[in-house]
View 1 (cartoon, rainbow, N blue to C red):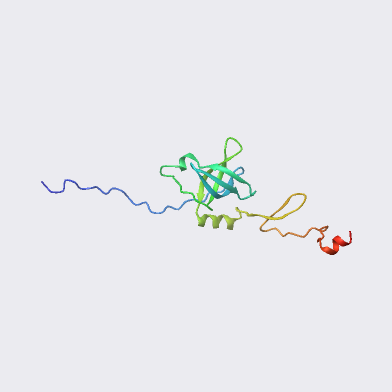
View 2: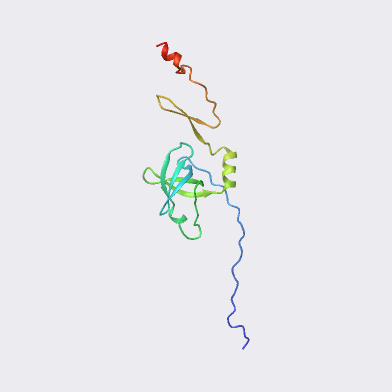
Length: 146
């Protein structure tokens, strides 16, 4: 007997970090930011281009197996349209990918500026907002002159 009857073979190879190609959104796909996890692989997601909040499930193959992705609060994700009117979370972007998307001009943030009697004025970060020409400030003198 050789004395080495229970040796373990180490056949596993280290693949290292593979460079992953950056995925851009197509016509119907959207970028979103996770607001809160709801449980059962469902998330509240804010669509970046419109500012709308939707409830999205995680794509089936992303829930388990080799392509499992752990998604947390404030992560940026790619949303693909579902059969109905909703979206499904397809993939998650790393912080480096988010910077590359912003640099290429794919991600545009929406900021709410002012609420008027006609509705909400929405401006993108690169837009310049001008004051309304017919707006007057209501003060005590203005009320006294009525």
